[in-house]
Image (cartoon, rainbow, N blue to C red; front, side, top):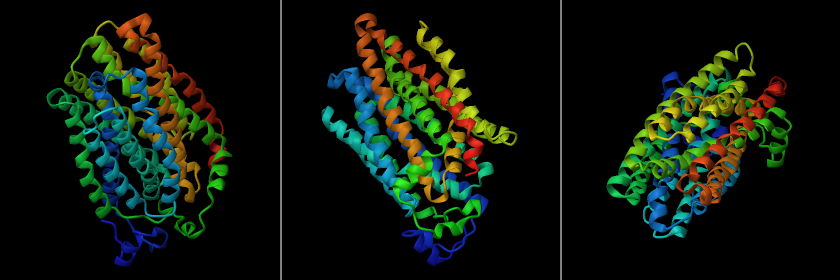
Length: 440
């Protein structure tokens, strides 16, 4: 357990800047990363469960694909992304632990409330508030991990944290699919929302707030004044590698979120799979492949970066490019078995980016700007990727429906998957100036 005196523990709840020097044991640091990974997994469960429930919601509420794209994309992403900036600003000044705890409680309660929605507008309002709650978790968690773990192993640590994505997706698809099939989509929302409220209590009671810059041996920097938001934006924007990094992650997320949200509906429509079958299949493929890709990307980047730091950005770009050819097999196959088989390998490639990308964002940011740097990255991933990806797929599906009927969704998904090529170009451009920007 971390050694910390009582006054320090008490003051950390309000103003962590004034916390005395502390030492955190390795087992405690692992515990912190483990708890934050669980938080991230619950985040993804509550965020993504809508994707496995969209087809029954569409049928009950008689919604178009464009409306479903808005519900799962822009409506959520607009508030999630924009509120992430001011909340991250607060996280650079105040207790990140408190912010995470409050965020978990809010989004979990609102997820459960989605199950009570009687029409599109009520469901929309609840999903917006889920986005409001989830806005506070990511930047604060990234900043905490950066203050617990040194740069040399930070990609690996953030890769472990990012396991919350495939774990959350796996649980969300499997549990959500079977709950929907057995009890209906309303029960599914309620069942995954309630446990998060208990998790918020665990976060508040068991996590400690490290001094800013603790892992880098620069804790004294925490006593300096917080820069204004305009200075943060200007500082980060001057780093060319960071500029290309946020563009790359935004474009890649268009493909990622577009596929993640709509693939369950594609399997429902084109192959008439049940919710339970879709949930189980995707849980195994996306979950296991995501774990392998996420962990592998982090450790591979840390290992190769010892010879050239640019591997931290080459790995994500190569992963996206290698995933593209498999998309044609996925969406042009004639059977569900072939489609799912084609999914296995590209899921690993597409998940290589998590650890390296967020580790470099933290490395490029000054100590007082780390939560903001994560928020900027998540803003692009969320506002551009989560906002436009599902919406774009929905619009394309409706436009292609007169030509392809029920199969319009497969061609819409194929088109959006090609965004990985554009994203890879920006990862390469970001790598060109990475060494110079890290030296600033």
